[in-house]
Image (cartoon, rainbow over the protein chains, first blue to last red):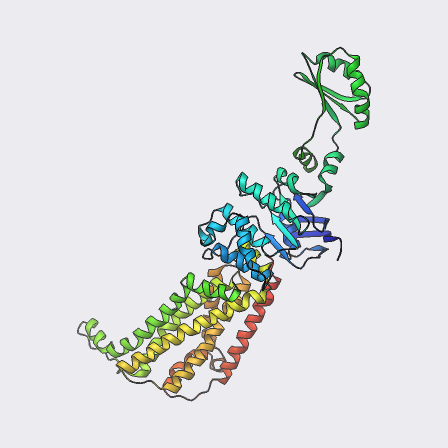
Length: 294
Length: 246
């Protein structure tokens, strides 16, 4: 058994003249939660479809080292005349024939569907269908779970439940989690791959992404009164690459974290500004995402 | 829940079994009634004009049943089978099935259940036509009726298999049903060529009248061709759907 559940190399997918995926390579560690992040139309669903065996790559190779693979499409649908329990039960029996069917009720309860398990799914809302899709996906104890925008149609409570379920699966299953909701990705993913225009433009941990972005380190200095005089002082320092006043705040930027950590405090001590606080400017995943995808 | 139970539920919960039964049972009842009371019906609507009608006979009753029942019945069978066999018509539904089972696993129960439902409906309709004929007109030839029913059942298997093949060529349910009906019409037209007629599945439809009238069994050729075409259609549909992306 290899360390990586998914290994893909040079995957290209063309639809006529349109290139949906362009030389995509990625690897997903067993037991991890991998976030596939990208704007709409980046190729996330196509890539998941290829990994699930539902589509064939035009070029490239991939291996999936998992016997039970479950997929949750972004808008799951089922025969409207089926009852919720029947959907989950069918999924369970196909994945684990002869298994203990108590798992069906457990999963229905976990996804908040036990009370409506006897109802036909034709009357379900999109959010309920998404929960049902998730229940049908996880009930078979998948080794690899491919989730395409699993929380997109859910209310905040439902979203939290889905993220909790994904967190619980960590270690037992490998999860590839496609989303453009960066808060969700940040909450559950160990590693991410950023897809943009069919290409993986980043693959690694979130920390490395934020730390390794091209953004220069900045500190926000809050002063009592106007920050104009501090701007003048800092602007004359040769280690400062940029300094701007933002009301009572001054944002100072340097070439490296080491320089700013070493030079900023002595510089502030030398001027007569009344300092209220000094703190690094934290960058959100969203900032970095926008930076790398644009 | 298994794929077999799923297909039975599909037939009953979508009321498709009642559509199939409704068509064959209603024509099964109407065939003998129409044959028995045709002179009275014609006299009532003839407006004084004298129209010669053949005397009521068991053969006429059964032929009347089959002629009407097959026209509407095949259309119903094609749509009912297409609704089950065109499982790729909604990709989100197809994802659920395709990631959990192979195409033969998915299709086999769909083929078998729809074939059996079609045959069952046809046999019930034929039985009603037979009983109605016995009660109102006279007893049709039992042996001929049984053999003809068997041959027509093989033909209905072919109709379902052809629908499966059509569903592997197009994703739409109406599209698959209409391709099936169109192909059957083309086969019927080709069957007008005497050299071809003896080999085509459409000959099995024509066998009904002849066998009930006591004709000789001379249908091995079309029977074998129909079985081979049915198996070929099923095999081709599985191969095509396996290659199709979702």
